[in-house]
Image (cartoon, rainbow, N blue to C red; front, side, top):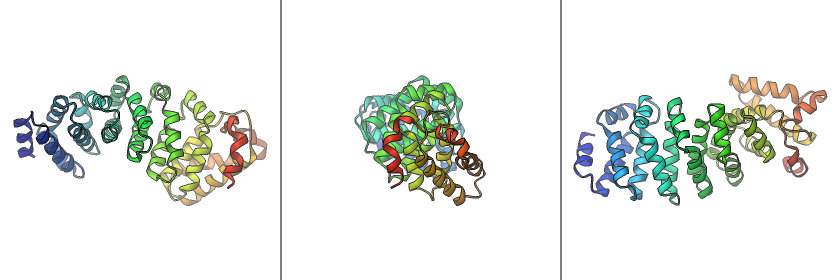
Length: 317
């Protein structure tokens, strides 16, 4: 690590040395917390950011820089996330994304870095949102709708950023709801994309404006489809149930076929993972409503009346 750092400091003007040196740090930081600790102690964060600022137009430097920050900000030590942000890492990552909007590898690496930086860190979330991070993420997802890795990391970043009600509102205003729904519709076979998007919806749907937009945009059906296609995926079922529960109260109408399908999927989810206490609790509450005809209007409130006429038949296929 010290040899790599010496090379980076000695050859700051060489984009090739910076690219390969940072790539080496990126790989070393991937799996072992001990390596991450050593890299941090060697002053790597500052050197990576210097390289990214000095070689702002070099795609490889930006890609590797974001990748190294991503790996340094994962898991332990948790302090790495604070160190990166304090050194100006959030701004550097966002600038890389803005400078290279059409370059998917930078957009994916940038979203991944923001995803990890926002994880369990209130200060970083606030900083990312204050610098229009949600807009940058949504823009990346919109510009590269076929890049599954980017969509997964973008949705994951939005999920981690959606902590406070104010943050949920700002993410919704940035266009995230449509971006997430579009990603799920275009990649139904991509389990990781579905999981990250549902995790984002589980968090966002607590907000009144977000839940209304999710429902009115056909989100309920898309969530049910994802759950139906991934009945062995515990996290998808968990987040799907949470989102469905949060979406209660968003509709004036009812459609018995859709309610029956929702009941069937939730029943399978509860049966599949009896040890998941949160899934059992949320699923059981949903089933209490679904199984009482006298409360069918309550069941129906989580469905958008705007989508009733054209989705009931699809759900039964």
